[in-house]
Amino acid sequence: MSGRPSILRRMLGESAVYGLGGLANQALAIVLVPVYARELGVESYGAVAIINTTFALTTMVITLALPQAFFRWYLKEAQSDRERADVLRTALGLRLLVSILGLLVFSALSLQLSVVLLGSASDWPLIALIGPIVFLDSLNLVPMAFLRAQRRPRPFAVIAFIRAVLGSVLIIVFVVVLGMGVLGVVLGSLGSAAVTTAVGYVMLAREGGLRIGFDWTRIRHMLAFSLPLVPAAVAGWTLNLSDRYIIQAFDGRAAVGLYSAGYVVGLAINALAIAPFTLAWGATYWEIARQSDARRTIARVLTGFTALAAFAALAISALATDAFRILLTPAFEAGRFVTPFSAFGYVLYGIYTVVTTGLNLENQTRRVPVITVAVAIVSVLLNLLLVPAIGYVGAGVSTLASYALLAVVSGLVSQRHYPVPWELGRVGALLGIAMGLAAAALLGPDHVGWRLACLAAYPAVVLGLRIIPVGSLSALGALGRRRH
Image (cartoon, rainbow, N blue to C red; front, side, top):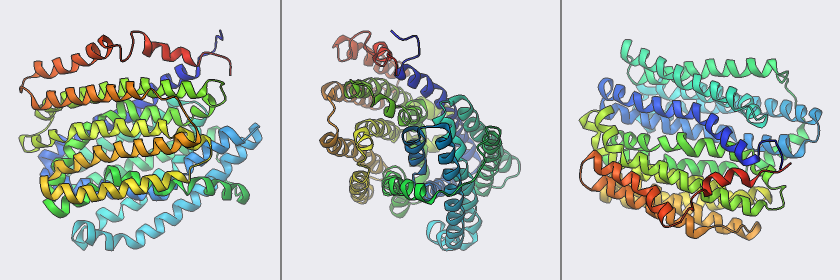
């Protein structure tokens, strides 16, 4: 037995550290909601949600999925330190070109976008400032991807933590102290983006990686790998955020504010489990794939992930009522009914990340856009059907159904190219139990004791029925214990 840490144990450790920055970001986002409630109100908070939705879409497009291409060439294709240095230089040069082009295009369209999205040309600065924020964040992707590839989650988490904390502090100063309203929210994000990008490049310079190169052959290969993933990223945005536009069209901006508040609380699952796991998994499954029992290991990773993530989603859903009453004003409380849909939707997204591993391993990424675009279309149709009928809760139903469809369809396609012995019975049971208990906690007696009882029932049922045998989760850490 090797004395070196196993791959999976290291992945779990990295996940915990990666999660610190994301956890801080989501926690501070929740803390800021009461500030928005008092200083902005429900309708202006809806405007903030529309701006954030637009920011996310712009980021998806300008990013071009280049971090994934960087990982492939840096971790798999490069065979020496010199080749890895060349990959880093090329990634930096390509990132700079794409970011500048994206900034110019967005700036040219910002006035028209202001009229379409916010209904007034006078709000143009709110939209125009998205361009510089995305420019800075996209540039910072290079040092952040370098830290992940180097297995250095701590400095990665520090930079993410600075982005979250500084941004929140600046927002409070601009919104509360200076009374700048929604503009203060955007300026706070711009200031934190500028500082963290500077920190990232200082770190990269100290590592000797601040060199720009243009290996056009490698650039063509990187773009050929990453560009098919862009429609998938945009489709992911459609699944996650596009419903804000539909809610605004049918129910108005106040409904967007209520929906977004509930969604933000559910989004805590992303910081607690999904984002840290996917960050670590994206740089780990390439190593697992070299093992003789890789397929079995990947299957057990999915089961273990589902068990833990479903429990986290249940906890957030069960306690959402109390979180709303403690953190928010009464005007926002109706948003708590959205929280379970977003929480479990992100669990299903994490499952999707694992079940599509085979498509990446077999270089079948061209399949991903077809699947995700098709599911995104279904999501939009569901929103157009459900939001007019049952309001913003319909958008939550659409989110959960769409993520479930994404995981199932993509998993079936991936299975054709890279068969994995998934433990589907266990995965389905874990999800069903957690969702059922979440519904009972939200719709049952309005008492915190009842909600805690629903939460405690999950491990009792899961272990009692041996859906996850005692000791199974801890055994996951031993699956990869071997020399590699």
